[in-house]
Image 1: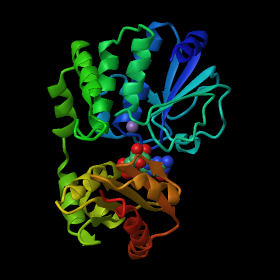
Image 2 (image 1 turned 135 degrees about the vertical axis):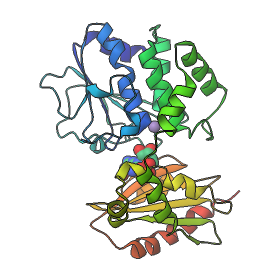
Image 3 (image 1 turned 90 degrees about the horizontal axis):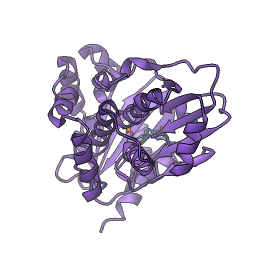
Length: 316
Ligand code: 5GP
Ligand code: MN
C-alpha cells in the first residue's frame, strides 16, 4: 500500500479507470481518489469506456467528470474493481498500471496488483490505502467509498460484511456521509418504466433443480415496450434469488453481442466457477458472463443446467 502511494506521488498525469458497465463500486472507487489527487496538484482523469453511465449513480461527487476518452499523456493508470484487462475497454496497455480489486477471479494484469478477495468492496481496499498512508478522507471521497460499500454488500447483507466493514462505514459517516441521503439517492428515485419491466421479467421466472435454481429472462422487446433501459435490469436477479427455495438465480438478458448471464447464489454455490467457464468472472455469490452470438434462451438454459447441478453438489 505504501508502494502504491509512492507511485501516485511520483506521477503527474494519473488516470483512474474501472470496468465497462460500471456499478457503484467501480465508479465509487475510481471517483473516490479524484478530489484527493486533485488537491495534491495532480492532473487527474476518471475514465470509463461505457458511454451511458448508470444514472442512479449521478449523485456521486464529480460524476460529471467521468470521460470516455483517454488523455494523451498518462504516467500512471489505476484500475478499480476490474477482474481482467479486457474489461477496462482499453486497447493499449499504459506504461504503468496499478490494479486494485477484490474479485477472486482477478488475473493480476497490473504492474502492481492489490487484490483483496475477502474485502466487501474495492472501495474498502481504497479506504485501507488512504488510512495506511495517513491521507485525510475528504467528504466527497467518503461519499464515493460509502456508496460503493453499500452497493457491493447489498446494503450490508452479504457474507463479506464483518466488524471491519461496519468500522469503515462508521468512519465514513464521521467524514461527513449521511447514510439516509445515500439510500434515498440509490433506492428512492425509481422510474415507473423500471417497475413495468420488473413485472414483465418476473412473469418469465422458471424454477428447476427442485426449486434450487431460478431463471429469469429479459428481452430487448421487454425494454422497448416498457421504455426501460439496461441499467433497470440490475437488481432483477437479486430479487429472484430471494425466492425461499432458490440457491442460484440466473438472469438471461438479450444483448447486442449475445446473451448476458448474471449469476447470484445464496448460501453455498460458487457461481464464479460457472461464470469463468463461460468466459466471464466475478465473485462466489455474484458473477456474470456473456455467451457471444447466441440468442436462444432455452439453449443457454439447457447448457447451464448441467453446470448448475455440478455446483449445487457443494451443498453443506
Ligand atoms: P453482474 O451480474 O451484476 O453483471 O455482475 C456480477 C459480478 O460479476 C460483478 O462483480 C461483475 O464485475 C462480474 N462480471 C459480470 N459479468 C462479467 C464478465 O463478463 N466478465 C467478468 N470477468 N466479470 C463479470
Ligand atoms: Mn466490486
